[in-house]
Amino acid sequence: MNTKRNALKSLATASVVALGLLGAMGSGLAQAQTKLKWAHVYETSEPYHTESVWAGEEIKKRTNGKFEVQVFPA
Image: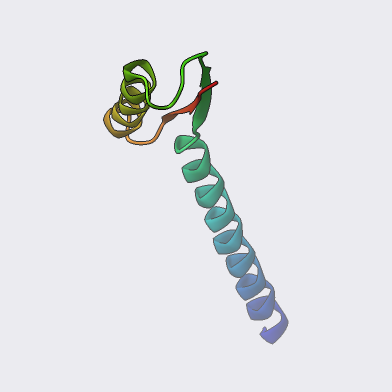
């Protein structure tokens, strides 16, 4: 009887651990992030660059971090 109880406890523990791992993996997939790289030939003082940086921040904010735009100036 004691052996059967220990086996059931082990099975229950393994099930809980497996479900926890699946839950952790699933939440990681739901939060997958896509990083886009945006390069241009303008200096950092140019309006094109400052607006590109602003647009990248807005995209990240409005997509709740799903998309991130990295801006690379000349």
